[in-house]
Image (cartoon, rainbow, N blue to C red; front, side):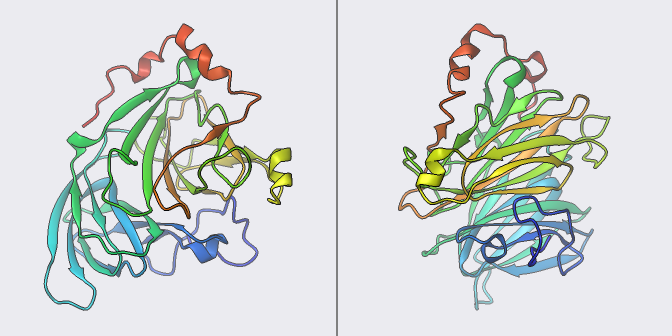
Length: 312
């Protein structure tokens, strides 16, 4: 998806990029901000796809299928590293292994049977070498309780993955009918937030089989601002979107949440974050009107559909 003038940048429609492989293509300039970007590629069996990271660092994150990734310093013919990513059949099936590529790196991606791969990225200033991330090393957390129960795959967050300068990545799976990104929270330049992050939501929605992504199902995404954002000189936001498979929502600032999965349809989203701070951080501030909800979880049971979910 390439962002053009006149497109609703907070909730662009699902569009193809300029190349057949590009399912989503978002760069900071197209989003009207500075740090975060995202590409989703659909690799055909046996074909080699080449790209250059340029001024960005990124994760190579299989959404479906497996692939091989070769890394070389830009302008060099020597392969710096090569990893085989086992991947997964679907984002709803398990966590996945992944890889990191630093800026000024040439990548070659090949999949024997075909694959879908996300490239969450952030603009950065220094080059770090390639690195492999094992599925076994991804902490899987069940967050919330009751109808706010969801699964969080912390593959690319500070303290778990520190081999990055800016980019942060996390996956969330929400059972049908449940609420995620709740209580609503923010990480922007309004008081009292300690950290500013731009954020991208990439949605996948499973169909009736609960595993295979399909645009048949849907969810709801909510985001808004408060008086403190007006005080900080930030544009007012009051949005509620229907989201379907492969839709993207941008969060430049403001409270975001809840993200609601329609009954019958599991919801996945990939969060990509980055900001101007010297250190990567995920600190956020709850909407004070709803922050009390967190304290209520201790008296509720975790949704049993999340207990015993496969993590690999």
